[in-house]
Length: 59
Image 1 (spheres, one colour):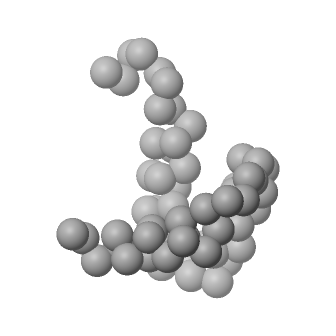
Image 2: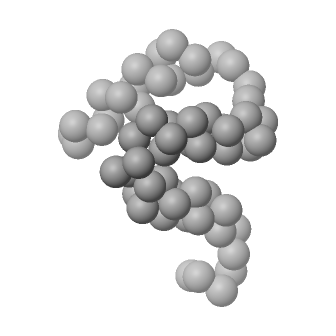
């Protein structure tokens, strides 16, 4: 188990029944980077990965 799995598990346990929009998620990611600018690159990579999940060219 990766250390990050604990945070993911907490997210699922606390908010797993909620539905959110990608717009909402984008705003939360921006908020996070504003508060934690040292994670800008990681959040950028994560957002790009999510955006391109269904791209057949990346396979």
